[in-house]
Structure formats: structure tokens, C-alpha cells
Amino acid sequence: MHNKALALGWIAVSVLWVLYWIAMTASLGVEAIGELVASAGHPLLVGALCVSLPVGLFFIGMTAAWLRRIFSIGKA
Image 1 (tube, rainbow, N blue to C red):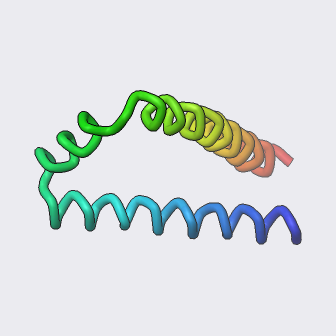
Image 2 (tube, rainbow, N blue to C red):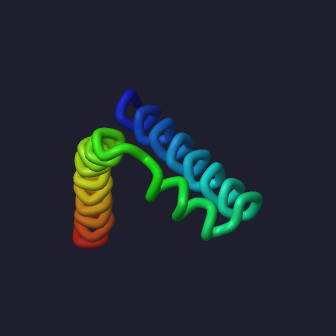
């Protein structure tokens, strides 16, 4: 049950993060977001990369585990 709650929490946070960026893009426009990223300091962009890389790897791992579980349930 703990893993299920953790996965649901992760999904909720991810959905809220995507909705936040959709709202930011809709209100500011794509050009303003591009300027915001371009004006950010180099350490901030490197920090964002260091945070996003493990998150991306975690997402890929969760997706692979989920697909593996789905396909193994059908065989049993």
C-alpha cells in the first residue's frame, strides 16, 4: 500500500507541475518563457538540469516497471 500511495502522490505532483507550466505559458506566452529561461543565470540552469535528470530517469524507470507489470499480469 505504501508504494501505491507514493505513486499516486508522485502522479498528483507531476500533474500539478504540468498544469502550472500550462498556465504560465498561457498567461505569459511562449516568448516570455523563452526570455525567462535565457535570462536565468548559468548556475540556475545547471541546477535545473541536475534536478530534472534524476526525475526523468525515475519516470522512465516507473514507466518500464509499470509496463512490465501490465504485460506479466496478462501471462499469468
